[in-house]
Image: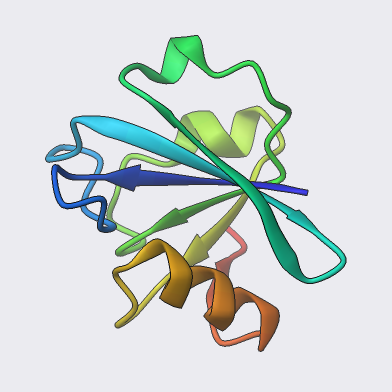
Length: 96
């Protein structure tokens, strides 16, 4: 499973308007298998099941159209905290 995260220079979750790169965390059996970093969303070749954003006010309609699930991280900012929150089902899913 792959989770897409917009990140800033400190490699923390940020709004898509502020992000300067993307992280794709690959999970396997509940563990982080790999984290890849990209400067452009167009460079990402992995199939992505979810994107994590900081609020539902983000521009997320393109992800809905692509069939990508959208999760909101209310307080988590580091990639590790986001993945842990995902594993414990602490992220909120946007349904519409």
